[in-house]
Length: 545
Image (cartoon, rainbow, N blue to C red):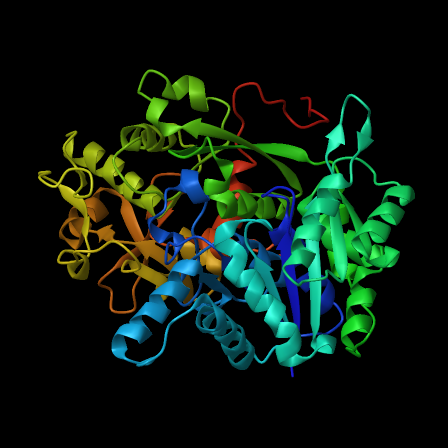
């Protein structure tokens, strides 16, 4: 029987539950324990696919095409496991399934209730993940905070699990925040006490409490939390804000939390081996020369909208022993007169994915600047489409080339809706989603980056390169370096007469890892680091004649 670890949050949201869960998974995997991870999201949307990035942040796409919470990205980056649609469940999915079953007649004669029908449906999702993954330990994060009305069915379901599978097979962790009062210059534990009391009122006694804080947590505070929350002191884990999120697994292991979990759950495995992780963190903390990258997007006010892109750039910079100096450029404000001032120090320009007309002309201006000034450029999904539109405007000497998403009546629809997308009447969950194969064309930058002929990449888009313009743009210098196996879809394009200008229709950022950067990001940074821009200092010592 698998073991279950349930993680709840209290006091405030965005306290770092997702990072904590990913880090616990890393600590367990370091002992040879197989792990599967799941996120429970209380909102009533079926998935975050139709939600604004300003509301939800990045939509993370799994290999099987599920549009999920960005926490799944951290699960994958930390543990190097591949999540699936089973790894994310929302209240919307649960209610939708239950109502569909009721309409079908599965409960004829019965009254459908939160308990037991809704909670049974939630628990069935736990069993499904356990059966399909075969993992020894299931880590399940409950989104939101204790006290949120929409999260109560999830908390009731995880409460029932202790009786369903036995108390020796369940471990409850509560992540809280200790606020610091500037006036008295001390951390306060009272919000944590209230949060745990509310959790206990729902029938859940935490086995461990992870205490987030921006200042060191004194032993006396751990004693106090242990006393008032009825938790062993060794299970009150201090998690002071770290200089890098990748240090969190080491902090948990060094305070004995990994051993505490395996002891409480009766898991007999080898000693933890985090040597590679320690080496990674040491490299991260070592000072490096920065590489300046401009991210031009329409949601830059909320950095979490591009969470995986930022991390992939970070991984690639680290691979080249560089630190990442990422500056965010609002494309909506990037007109032709401002582009030089905004991008003059950029050693590389990246344009990530997105939807809608707002800010598109600013992205096109950035792509033109990169092409004309020979600045390394990486376009992701929309960024590839923007690169194509800009190049077509140059080739046809016209401002008319566009995407039919932005101008349905454009004279040059170089980007057009995929055939199967043109008749759809709904928006949720029906894009080209998940893994699709990409065949690399020999002797191209993309092929040299990957070092193999066929790869699988994750997609999330409705539009594609219009093959009607493949010949004309190809003759003008655009190389189609990645294609679907049947040659019908352009997956990667690049410019012949440019040091490194590459666009891909997929999202490579989703499969980048801290010690294994994605090949396109890796080579993008590799070229960008050698670009000398305004205000940069040449490396020392200078050679003299």
